[in-house]
Each structure stands twice: as C-alpha cells, then as structure tokens.
Image (cartoon, rainbow over all chains, first blue to last red; front, side, top):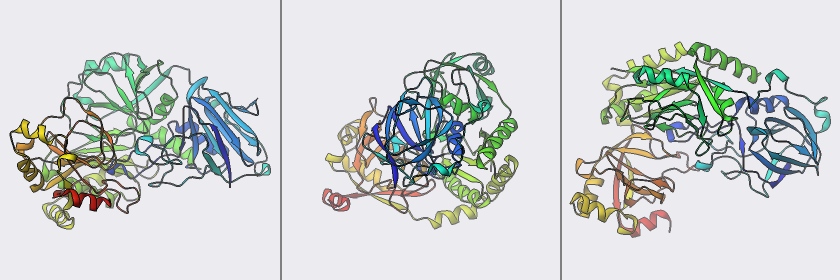
Length: 309
Length: 230
C-alpha cells in the first residue's frame, strides 16, 4: 500500500469526500468538501469516482513525503505547491515518485486547496462517508485533522497509467479574489421579514467576519436585518441557509452546520456560490442577488451532471 | 391536516404543520417521515423531522421539484388517525436508566431550592413521566424530550458550562435531555445515564428517533457502575 507520510500537517487538513448523507435525523451533519467545484475537479482530472476521498488543505503549510509512485491532482486555493522545491502548477495533474517531498506554503488566494491521488485516499467510511467532522469525531483517519506522523494511504499508480498530464481548462478556474455576488433562493420565512429589511440586504455589502467563520458557517457583518420573528422552534437547516439571529447579522450555514436551528432564515444561497464563498477569506466583502428556484435547480443539475460522467 | 410546504433550499423542501409544539403532532410527524421514505425511496438524501416541521432533501438528478411536492402531499394525506395509532403501537417506550445521586447531579440541590421541591419529589416527577422525542440534533444523538411536568420548568442556566460530562441528564424550559457527548451546555444537570446515547459502533447508533417515547428509570450508584461496565 502506498501513501504519504505527513511531515507538516498544516493549519487544518482534512480528508473529505462529498459528504455524509442520510443521518441528519440523528443529528449527524453532512460534512464534505467545502468547495465542491475544486474538489470534484481534482477527482475528475484523475478519472476518479466523483466521491473519491481527497485531502482538503485549509490555508496550507503542509509537507508530505511520498512513499510510493502515484499521480496527484491539485485544485482550489493557490498554495504554492512544490515538489522537491520545484513549483507545481495548480489545477493540474502531476506524477510524483517515491521519496519526493511535496510542500505547500500559506494560501496566496483562496482558502481550501485540494490534493487528490489516483483512485483516492483510502480510509474507513463511517456512516457511509470518510468526510472528517472534527466536532463529531467522525471520518478521516481518527475523526480529526491530519497530524504529524499520520500516513495517508493510497494504491500506487504507474506513470503509464495516464499518457499525459491533464489540466482544468482556464474558463473553469475561478478567481478567488474577484468580487463575489452570492445568488439567493428566497424561501423559508422570507415573507415574514420586513420588506425594507430584505431590500436593504440585497443592496448592501457584507464582510466575512474573522472570528467564528469556519466549516460550520460564515458569519457576516453589515447592515442589520430585522426579521421581526422571535420564538421559533428548531427546524432542519439546508446547506447554504441564511440565518438571521437577533443581532441582525446574517450567518450562512455551510458543510459542517448543525442539523437543527431556531433562527429565522431569509433564504438559502445557490450551492455553487456557497462553494465560491468558502474560498473567500475573512475581511472580504460579498453582495447578494436573488435567483429563481428553477434557475438555481437548472444550474445545480448541470453542475452535478457534468461531474457525474 | 393543516400544513404548508416551503422552499428550504435548491433541493430541500420543508413541511410546516404548526407553529406550536404538541406531543400528538410529533407522533404524526414521526409517522409522516416513514411515509415520505416509502414514497420517495430512490431520490431522498435526508429527512429531518423536528417539533413541527419535516425538512426533506432530495437528489436533483433523480427527483423533480413537483414530483417531490406531490409525494409530500400524498404522505400528509395518508396521516389518518389509524396510521398514527399503528405507529404508536409499533414502537416501544425506550427506558433510560438514570442515577440521580448527588455526585452525578451537580444542580439538583440548587434546583430543589429554586423550585421549593425536595429531591425525591423532583426525581419522581422527572422519572414518572413518559416523554416524546421532539427533535434530535444539536449534536449526534441529542434528543429534545418533552414535555416536562410544569412543576419542573426552569429557564436555562444564566452561565452555561463550558463542558458537560457525557451522559448527563438535564432539564431546561419544557425539555429534558441526555448529553451524548461532552459538550458545552446550559441546562440543569440532575443525573447521569450510563448507556451511551450515540454509539457509532452500535447497529442502532441512536437509541431513539423523533416521535418515539422515552422514560427514565432511577438506578443506584452501584447499578450505574455495573451498567457502565465499571
């Protein structure tokens, strides 16, 4: 069995697949790669199954020793990845040899970088998924982030397996520092919000708060939204739900969200934009616009169809 | 039955039955989840019941919005009183042993003073009642059980604990619960349950689901240790 030996685990590096589904009724969250666009491209470049396990590297600072030949793919945040100190192109596949040293610096743009290997990393699924959720101690190698000395197992692959290096066409490579407009599907209790609050929300810019923006959700700071709703009972929360607690500052719930929540919700973000949002750093500003449900569904179907073939 | 279906996301719909929690409604909701699973078997991702709602998430490549809506409406239309009864009969009450001894009940004395009830009376009121599971969430296996006897109702602690021991049996407002993991928590701790609430190695990782009935059974310190395998 081949593998990478972890020399430097980085700020937070997690094994992820596309998520843990079918257990939210027990309080088990979905988890899964924060940015499906980048993580799915990493698997696609190598011809892996769409749900193959990848390494999600948050903010970088990782060093891995290669213990067997394989092909890797790099996507997502720009982490200045090098092999034996020679820079490697992002959004591409590379062949690595036993004894090579893969290093990554701190993220220059974006937040999460993805490292895939041919056929994916090997890990024991829990509740049908290898996604690591630290809070629940589920998935990954031991339910937590990578640590120094861990071994990320994979089946080794020969150079001949792929005749050519592959790369993502430039039109599919996002610019993580471009201004982000997040499209919102209205719903939930939106009719109960004050109309002037809703229009102010769409006209304003919101800053991603540094503290407590994480895999559970991103907290925003900007114009206060008065929901005028109190005393809600907890209910299921979907990916991308926009919660508005009493302080009027919205929270966008992401992959590791709690399964239930009792705050008013003014809608949910188009998942594609949720993936882009996940690559934005604290302090950056985002804006919102509305999208019709049918249009949102069309875009998501297109996305999942593209990555399922 | 009155209900509305709301958009909860690109591939999620939420059935809202009411704005008020109600022990009878939660049994109906439990039954409705089973019907939804039957009707939408091949395109469901998650079905999350809670108090007065059910959120349904489906696979966009396998199910259309309208088809899912129709299936939800069909499920609700089948919630006649017979089906509610049958689901109640089918599931037994889950018995959870609790040791109310002082060493596991750090808030029992203060609670006794606050409520002007002696400890035995609190234990009796807490363990006599059969509770409904209104929701499972907050963390894996955390069940919101209710409703408490009106005499036992207290607000949450003004200062939540940064860490509550796993297995702690707690009360706050209308609810009682067992903390499955050691987490921060703001409820009053009145006992400890020796059986893990959530065990990923167990065939049924969670001992109950929404709509089930749960009752607490007082045990001694010795029985607690024995059940814990100590």
